[in-house]
Length: 230
Image (tube, rainbow, N blue to C red; front, side, top):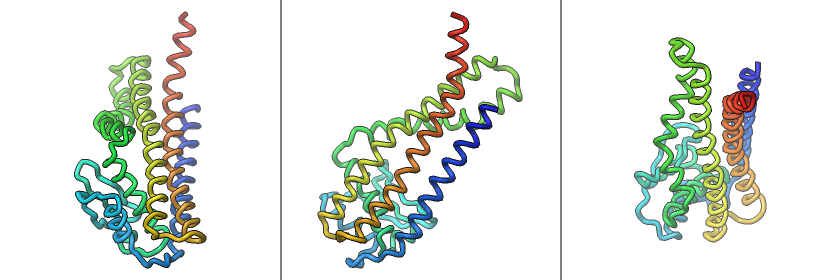
């Protein structure tokens, strides 16, 4: 029952966070910017202002598929944000530029997250397939299975914890860059950008809370069992 309770809680939290982002994007994509710059032009202007000349700006299909690829130095914008001239598109583009700026200045948490990608991928596979394998084969004792799952979710939790300062710092840099470049004006435009980025940032908070809940679900029985043994 505890497992299903955590599952329902995390699904509800993730669903609410996703809805909040979609709702904010839909609302603030209706707020035009007086500069008339597209997301791609915004990204190019910010990178130029920051003397970053080795990052490629690319367009990608899909909804909110925007991301910065530090391994290949690519700033990828979804088609709607690549061509969009609204507050949401400009805000998202600036946020991804925030990551490029972090990369340039060797922002430590970004490099920690990059270094953790490999082990996080392994942990994701463990939490996805581990319970099925443990139940189907019966070769793993419950205590060992709990330990493996707790370690895997612990890794994911730490990854999400590192992600929080990375994302919030990128948003801070994005707002500063937009202001310095004069792309977004104070008033409705800057407020729309702020609210859009705040809604997007909450998804990372929700992800951290979700992984923390699953970690505690598997770790607490181990700790309580050890306490009982003592």
